[in-house]
Image (cartoon, rainbow, N blue to C red; front, side, top):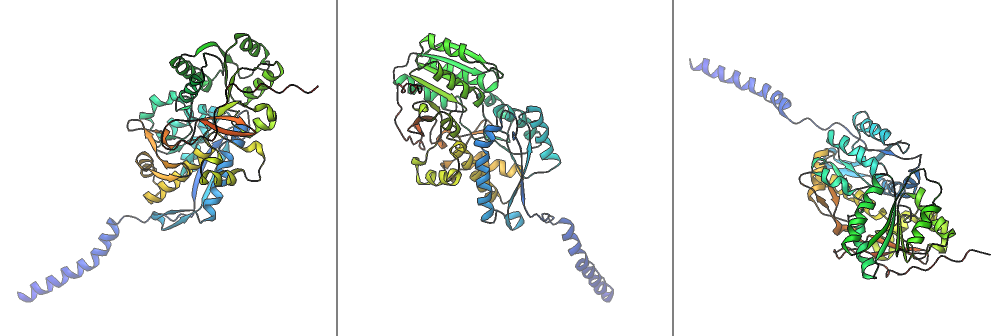
Length: 424
């Protein structure tokens, strides 16, 4: 009997020794599949009316940032135990919202990208945001943002917006600057799209808050060619301030027409368009005193000085972008650090880091203001400035909030100098 029990125990031990490795193989977490790169997808307006924004907005930033990261070996991802270089997969959305939406879905479902960076306008981001959230895919945005998306952000948890805009916190700052100079009246023009309608509406609210009366509020059709009647109306109004909330297709001819007709208000703000180097290239010294949206300047810190050299050193002036290039670079650095902290490319894990962490970037302390349990805007405390003004060929930062990172580089000139006399 004892022998039978003994041999039974031996048999059970042998079975266990065979079965345990098999059981472990069944229950162990499967190893991550081999991976040799991080693929980032973008639908960008490489052609069409928005293409100048690609060429002078986020385009030069990712064209400099990605090679710099790859030159250092890439991003270390603990899950794979090594650094992975970044590969960009970019499609041309042809400045068409529907095309941008379709390409965004293709990048997620067919190309299975590890990162999703936005197209280059507010309207495009509105189209991309619900698609990214439908598939739980982090959408990092650049040239675009809108206060009208704020109410939707609690239901868009994967959308992280980096550009300052209208009431986040451009026009509140600009209104305070004007009021401090005794401005009483304004004339507003705006492109007839989501961007223009928002800026016009926020201008009405913010100017009204500080007692500035709007004497004209005129919509600019996207295909408008003759701006003379509008400029003449603005001139006749006698308003202290003229605002053009349009894209380069409006900003450039509006400026040229104002010069030709001798319209010299005490202050002008132009954007988007006035913030780009091509604005100064086109109009030269005549830009003196014209305002635009601007967040940074090389004078703000050694880090900003280095960034300007990385982005624009030795490159044509018209590539420069004073509104947002620093925010874009900081957002990319944040994305890299978020991946390194989580040790994975899992979208939810990276998204949760975006929603909760602070990282040090070229902006200084960098973090996001989250709405509910949803998406977020780059915190105003991470902005270095809001309003710029062309002075001696440089877009100086002349307006910003009292938050910790604000660093102005020049005083606001008011009234602006008159246009130079035309050559005889």
